[in-house]
Length: 540
Ligand code: SIN
Image 1 (cartoon, rainbow, N blue to C red):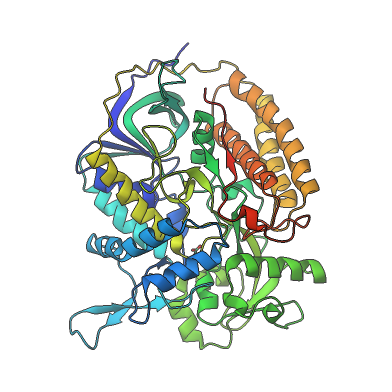
Image 2 (cartoon, protein in one colour; image 1 turned 45 degrees about the vertical axis):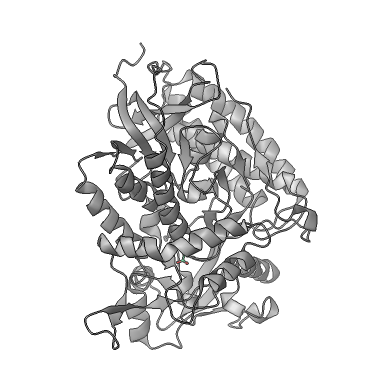
């Protein structure tokens, strides 16, 4: 029986409750109704997990030009310079607004301006100045708290928790003539297991990244590449997915799932040591532990392979214990839970998948190639990050681009959709024996990606991954069309598509650049500078 749940209509449908989605919603609610759909609870987002902070020109010895140069340097010849310049220049104004709605960053009384607070700035890899605003080591959680509070006070915003977007609805999917336009999405309510059509004048993908495509990641469970996969299926261009950033320092402990040790720890002086206790970064880069992330992650990977060790060690024991506990209370507490006192002993760490630098191709307003479909934050590829994101530039991008997308829609409101979205046709079969396929395929994709599409790649490994993913996709497609939909199946389908996009982009690029390192093409090729690897599916 087809699901007869009536279509819900809003001006704007936002997928995701991280910084990008919430910031957009707050601005857009000034001129329209907004539904925000989120897979789990409203605070389940990559933003909420962000430790380090938000990079912005704030100090007197800093300039936008210096921030631009650091970003271009990390981006390894692939950033769009005009995009970098404009996003970074807009950052301070947007952060002031964030502070006005209640986000609190660490600071101290300003001796020159009594009654005012001077914000404390930390440093991270690749930054030539201290410019990272932070709230201890839980900056994302503080931003998320402030945004959620503001959203809760806004009557025109409705937040739907435990709702999973299944697919976008476009006019071409509905068989209508003309250029394709996104008119809504099908959304699964996890509690009732019903799929409802949501109609909207514009759909905003703010779904974050895809760390769960890899076996080891610093990301929360929700990071399954949903936005990229849905946009690709709808026919939008997706670019530069080979540039997956591996964070150098994820806690290595059998019981510590996905726990990041912030780069700010290195920013405040921590050093990396091998199992023999010796430092090794001087053999890789003169910037040592504060070299850009791709360099540090590759150095760690190479040391682990060279010595056969399972991990390396991050050592901040030379700093006073009080300093460490004050600056990194959450990291300190989490390490203590696992019996590691970071004030007295080095912390075992390994690199893990952390950030997706490519994504859905967008312009400066967050517009994708499909009318009515926008993408902001980690899901989008604006050109800011190029081949390697500079630490703490991501929250800034999410904030600036969310405002831009909303401001664009305020001035250019999309036409009201006149088409009717038909109800979802559910598959009828449910066979519990087959459910195990979902978990097996999940595991196989994540291991394949880790083994063959990780920090160091080769053509042969990429081809091997392509083949395996192709077989898995066939199985998943069959399962998807024949069985009743579940959130696990939706996510499996999305990680499979995202994995294929990462491999497809990696195979397009016959060079090594930034985060994409291929032993068969170990050097950068000038012909590929400023050239995106793009994947597009023929439109339905
Ligand atoms: C960190 O705290 O190291 C993460 C910051 C980032 O990914 O930008």
